[in-house]
Image (cartoon, rainbow, N blue to C red; front, side, top):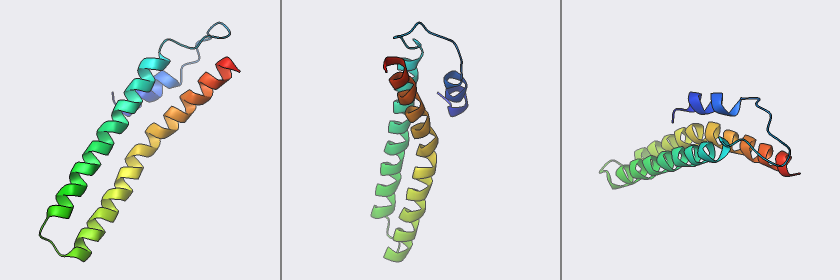
Length: 94
């Protein structure tokens, strides 16, 4: 699910009865976790490709550092949304 669509789903303000949370939360959380898994898998695959390449070690290390930075940048929005959902769930059951 694209991040923009996930963002719209989590910004809804529908009120639920006390002690319950929106039925959209579980599928949304699953989608966020699946997106993170895809990002991590792609990162590992790309990292392995770089490590196995015949280029010189300093270039490999630079490419891996760039890849890792991009990986963190891609993951951050999803992690923030997961944290937002966790806070929403905690408020529901507090």
